[in-house]
Every structure is written in structure tokens, then in C-alpha cells.
Length: 321
Ligand SMILES: Cc1cc2nc3c(=O)[nH]c(=O)nc-3n(C[C@H](O)[C@H](O)[C@H](O)COP(=O)(O)O)c2cc1C
Image (tube, rainbow, N blue to C red; front, top):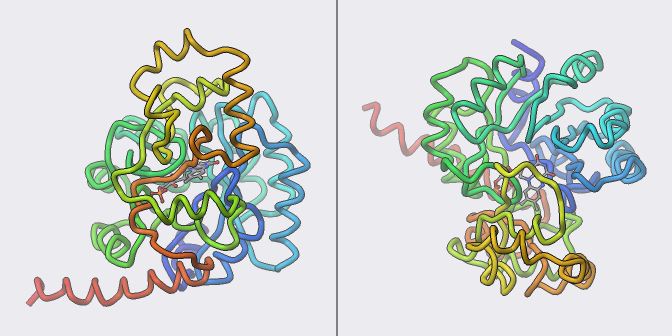
């Protein structure tokens, strides 16, 4: 067994808490590990070394092992973010949204396993060729940034046929039924974002958590509009799934026009809307599974609510008789 296989086999609940910039800090990551899963701290494109150290220290103080998730496309602008994360001896490091090759050896030298989120079959093949220890299939239903082209189940079926390495799966895995489905297909664990973003230990402001809880499965939108408006230079292939709001209603379908229309004032307005939690303008990153989150919970309760997955797997065994 590889270290990653051993780590995943040791989980009480086969759920990995997705790294979520602005939501998954040290408290959430540690709470997920404490509850029997494995939590990852999200390090975004505007993160600072100080923030990484602060969140890492919060998790370290609990004594629970955690991982980190970083964004390859933005790491060249701030490579110290990875060094700061590695100071905390993570079990696993997710290197997503770009080429992980430049960072693989450095992470491996610390003993951490490397995983990468993939959104297409071609991305999966590329990550395997790069030599990652495991893959995260991330379907277009998922919250936050990622590819918006293939949904979770078709991608999972394709990728499971490509490799014997552990495959985690995210994008809409939010209940015991969803977890049972992907485990029965052959996934090693769920990769869960949105339900944890709305939980008590998340860094999301209370208004954002309430909005995720209130939203239904059909109230999200996949778009680059929020990034264009904030002048974030995300590679064009990555949009983000967020709760639909007035801003996305106006611009999500017209991103070419938005590239032309964006002004310093608009950028400032969106950034201020985030500070003020003005949800008509600010992005609230969440996936379709927002519709499966219907009450305020702690991370431990989210994990507990996943545990009937075993009953669903048992029920499916009737097909073996
Ligand atoms: C609020 C939020 C922030 C996210 N930030 C990151 C991030 O910083 N790094 C990353 O690799 N993925 C990020 N993601 C994507 C998650 O890793 C994951 O793919 C997704 O949440 C899984 O789908 P789900 O939201 O349906 O559970 C984010 C997702 C959300 C909801």
C-alpha cells in the first residue's frame, strides 16, 4: 500500500474535506480530521504566507493531521505559499489548476502525498503522467473553481478505468447516498466542499452560510464573470460555480462583453461587496449540492450525516443475490 492508500484506508468516514480558499482554514480542516475524515486547508490565489502560517498553526494546535490545497497557476507569483504549507508537515498536498510538475519533488521530499483535481479525461492522463499519487475527479457540478465541461459521474467512470491509484471524487457528493454511489463505483473517498463551506467551523461569513443553506440545486451558476470583474488572472479554462445573484444574472452569459465593460469602479464594487457580504454582487462559491444542505451543522455533524453510506451499500447488495 502507498502512503496515500494507507491514509485513506485509515479514515473512519471516507470523506476528504476539499481545500477551499476563504472557507477551509485550520479550524475546519482539523475538525474534519477529528470527525473521522481528512481536512485540507485551502490556499487561494490571493493568500499570504502569514495567512497560511496562521491557519496551519490553528490546525497544528489541535494535534490533528491535515493537508493543504494550492493553485498551480498562481504559485509562480508567490512560491513561498507552498513552503509555508510544507512547514506544517501535511499528510497530503493537492496541486490543482495547472501543472503540478514543478512542485512534485519538493512536496514528496517532505513525505506528503500529492494529489491533483482533474476535470477532463485529458487532464487525468496528464496528471498521471506527471506522477501524482492520486487523482481527484472534480465534476462541473462542484462549487468553487474548476473545469465546467464534464459532470462528476461520467468523469468518474472514465477516470476509474485509467488508473489503479486512489481516485477521490468531488462535485455534488453531499449525502450518504452520493457517497455510497461513488464508493460503489470504485472511488476511494468523497471530496466534499460545499457542505463543509456552510458548516460552523468554516471561514465563510454567517450570511454566506445562510445563503448556501437556503439555495436549491438549480440556483448556482458556472461562470468566469466574478473573476473578470475582480481582474483575477485565472486561466480561461477555469470558471467557478457560485450561487446565482444579480451580478451573475447580468454577466454570466456575457463574459466577452464583461471583459470590455470592466472598470476600476466595477472591480472595487465587487471587492467591497465581498467585504460587506452584499450577496447581490459578491460571489458565494458553492456547488449544486447547496440544495442538499438544509441546516446549520458542525463539521462533525456533516461527517455523521454521511455515515449511513454503509446502509446504502448494503441495500445495493441485493443485486448480488
Ligand atoms: C467556497 C469554495 C472554495 C473553493 N476553493 C478551492 C481552493 O482554494 N482550491 C481548490 O483546489 N479547490 C477549491 N474549491 C473546489 C473544491 O476543491 C471542490 O472541488 C468542490 O467544492 C467539490 O464540489 P462540491 O462543492 O460539490 O462539494 C472550492 C470550493 C468551494 C465551494
